[in-house]
Length: 235
Image (spheres, rainbow, N blue to C red):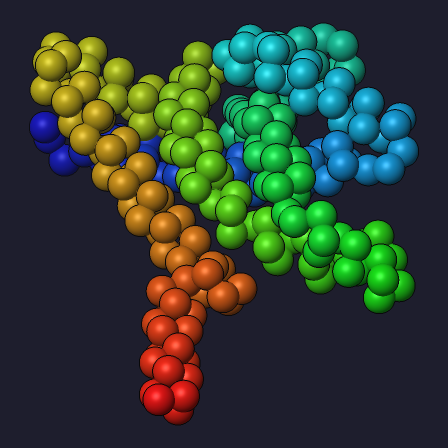
C-alpha cells in the first residue's frame, strides 16, 4: 500500500481505539450502577435496573446505533457526532451485559461477609465499598475481559454511520486497491493484536487485584512459607 493509504488505516486504528476507550468507560460505569442497583433492597430499584438490562440485552447493537444516530435528531432535534453516537449506543448496550457480571459477582460473595458488616454497624454503602466490592471485583475481571474483547469487535458496527474507524478505513483502501483478501487479512490481524493486548493487560490486573485480597501467587507463596515455618517450630 502507498503511504497515503497506510495513513488512512492508522487513522482508522486511532478512531477505533478512541471509541473503544470511551464506550468501555461508559459501559463500566453503567455496569456497576445497574449491577449494584439489581442487588438493592427496594424492589422498585431492582425492577427498573432489571428492565433496563433486559431491554438493552434484547435489542441489536446495530439497530441501537441506527436509533441513536438517526432517530434522536428527529425525536429531540439534536444530532450527535458519530464518535459520541457510537459511544452512547455501545456503552449502554454492553453496559447491560456488564451489569449481570457485577450482579453475579456480588451475589457470589460469602453471605457471612455481609453479616459481619451488619454486625459492625456498617451502612449499606460502607458494606458495599469496604466488604463486597473488594472481594467481588477481582472475580469480575475475566468476564469483563471477554466483554471488552466483544466490545472491540462491536466497534466495527459504527462504520454504518460513515465513521472512519478501522473497518470503514479498510473498506476505502480495499475499494482503492481492489485487493479484498490482503486488506481484510491485515484488518483481522490488527483486531487480533489489539484484543490480545487487552487480554494480557486484563490478566495482569486480575492477578494484581487478587493478590491484594490474598488470592494471588504472592499471597499463596507467603502462606506456604508460613506453613513451613509453623511446621518447623512444632517439630
